[in-house]
Image 1 (tube, rainbow, N blue to C red):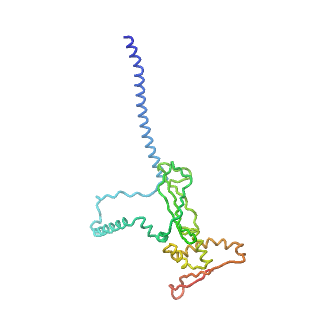
Image 2 (cartoon, one colour; image 1 turned 120 degrees about the vertical axis):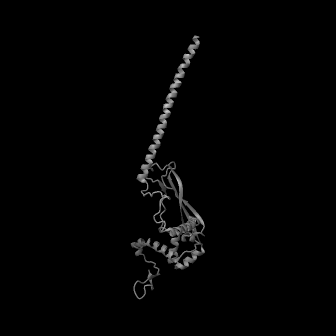
Image 3 (tube, rainbow, N blue to C red; image 1 turned 45 degrees about the horizontal axis):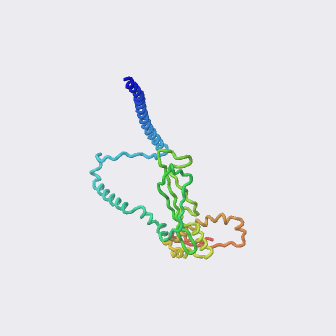
Length: 283
């Protein structure tokens, strides 16, 4: 009998400890649950503050209620039907014409669509922490390069990264969306690379080839649809980059300086007819 009482007293001690631990665990679980709800609430507040400070500030329109009575239903009933028909036609046209079709129809794309792609350069943005950012897309730029006897395409790929968690602020010195800057080009928004621009000047001043002959040569090499006005624009922008060289005293004092006469047409603003064109010569 004494042994049984001793065993019961021995078991009562752990049972009391287990009950105490169970109560403590239950209280801690409730505290953890409350803290998690508080964290969610504070996270939502931080996200709202980020949108207020760094988000777009645009007016929000009220949701349209179809049951709202129309004051001009009788007067514009015929026009409404016409508008619905036009809207359906516009939607069909937009669905048929994809983004790739729009890009393909651009003149630049038409000029280079037959040229081979021989070089690909991927430029990653500097200092991007991939644990915070993820890739959301890329910007693709194509430029035309020249090699003796051929034209080819160089593709420049610039990956675009964005923060994985939009509620967080970007690191110091960085943005929410990061992309590498475009390499410097001699002519802004020009598909011609430095090698092609140099070839245009070489053909013009060394071999005395006018623009229409150069266009024929580039057409035989696969560059279709190049116009004289486009080539003239590239030529002028490239020549402007050489103005500092012409102002150099060493160039002026050189024994041989080459010049080339270029004929340009312009419209006269005076005289009997404003549609009359005249020729001027650049040296």
